[in-house]
Amino acid sequence: MIEMIGNFDVGHERPTVKQHVSTLATVSAIQQAFGLDPNAFAFHNELNHEKSCPGHTIDRRLTTSQCAQIAGAK
Image (cartoon, rainbow, N blue to C red; front, side, top):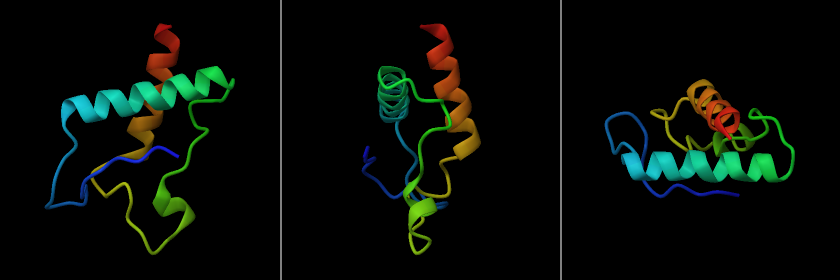
């Protein structure tokens, strides 16, 4: 599990650039190390519908696309 610290719901914090880039790099590195597809991850809110984690300002499709771009660049 990878945890991002912050309240990333609309009207609250946004992840910093460093936080966003390091999270994408970490997810991508884990996926590559285990031969996983860029889609092979779940947000907390997909596993527990009582949660909004990682927050409504974090877009799953964009995150997946960015992980795929990082994987393609290596």
